[in-house]
Image 1 (spheres, helix red, strand yellow):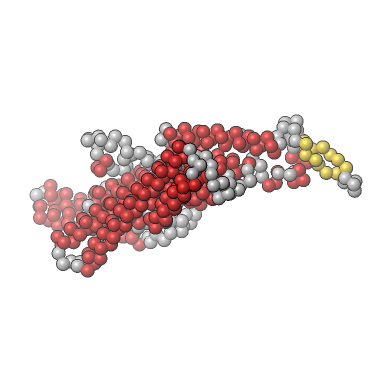
Image 2: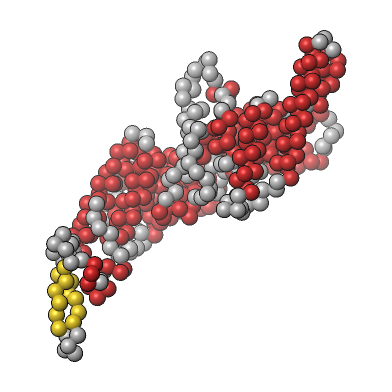
Amino acid sequence: MGVARTEETSTSTNRKDSFAMGSDGPYYKREKTFYGFDFARNETRAVSDSEDDEGNNDDAKRLRDESKSFYINGCYRESVLRYTEAIRLHRESHSISSGDAILAALYGNRAAALMMTGAYEGAADDCHRALQCTVAMPATGGLDSGPVFRSKISCRMARALLKAGNVWEADKAFDSAIGSAKEALVLGQLNGAAEKILNGCIMDATLGLSDVMRYRDALDGATKITADNANNKGMSVAADRRNSVQLLMFINSALMVSPGSMELHERRVNALASLKRWAELGNHCERLAAEIVKTDGIFTDDLAPLNPFPDIKAATSLKPDFFERNPDNAADPVALRILSPKAVCDAVMRLPNGILPLYLRSLRLEERYTEAAKAGASIEMHVNNSKHRGTRGIVPLAWLSNERDKLRRTMSWKERGDTLFRNGDYERAATKYAAC
């Protein structure tokens, strides 16, 4: 790998004499100045700036090829990491401009890989960077530059924004993609392949706008049901339940469009809790955590500011494909799979604060007492650590303490209920079970 350039090593006057005197590195010829003092003139023998840049260019090209190969083979995390390294090397060896087609392509391709890991906000950000690199590009260009590239990246950014739940910005981005593609088609001077890509962008963006409408319809329906529930709360148990089921259907529809919206996930969890579907609630939380684990370790270098969990170590027990393996296995259906206690500890570190209390409650009510105890202890240890304090926002510890007390009481009452049941005292056993 080439030697990285820095500001301190870009000119000879900033180098120190003792820095490179050996035969394996650059050396400096001593020369007298007019005033009798000497200075070191860099006569680099082994490594020069131009060779440095060439080395970085070669490494960046190799990493770009590796990234494409990883992406094609479905190894999206590895693809993101290679693209990140390629971007770093390219930026080190080139002055960044608004007409850098290579850097634009690297950002655009990394955005595609980020999309596949579920890092939708990062993908949208990369698309924005790619478009900034094309500002000074000519009105015409090949498939990897000019209006064809801009239309393709605009459409990708819109899709990333939509999946992240940023529907209003996605709407504008889809419109922009259609507009730029149509404008390029009107200008002409395009080959058949370019016209095909532009027409594909228009079709994809049009479908995207229909997804935006589907999301808005679902959200409007959910808002109306929520308002009806608030106005008619307690009037009829059957009506409340029917409304809750309809609300859940609307939220599910919106989540199909925007699977990266944490707000929608929180609303779904609350809807499941109102229906007392605790097993399904726990399964949803654990599948969400498994999806989030796919992004472990990808937020490095220029992606670091986008890391939603900067102080969380990589998961050791929760595997990202736990719920994806053998989906058609009737003996082990995905909807009934549960995480191990250690995997649950990885999961709670990645769940939004608004979901955590209901998830721990589901563990307790589904009699997963070990998981509930370990999960609560992990959260408490994390938020009490001064090094991590504030990184997850405000996590009130009162509910953690209450949940721990409820867990103890539930385990005690459950044990007493089991004893009464075995002794044939079914009525008192039912009372203990009800208290749980």
